[in-house]
Length: 118
Image (tube, rainbow, N blue to C red):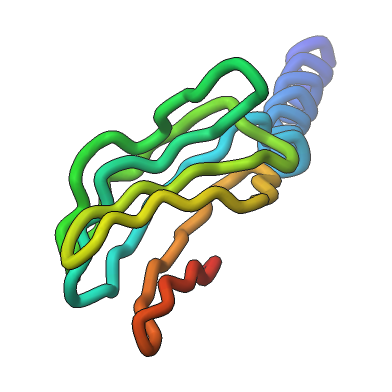
């Protein structure tokens, strides 16, 4: 009987750990896809009033994807995207990260850079 209670308790604790992982995810995994023809992504960072934390620092060439990078960013942030190519691009925008995996696809449409979340 004690063995059965121990096994059921162990199973319940294991199940709680698995469910908690899916409900409360406090990290975000980010990958950037560069679908532009003429620009190389040089950095992607999170910006605050007095600090800038580079999230992806590797160059992402046209048609390539970045490595997946994991950080403890969950919530709404101002992010900065820097690109070089036929001209320099340095833009900031608001982005929400809810934890889990995020894929941002950067595209160029009639000379305008757009960011799509997939």
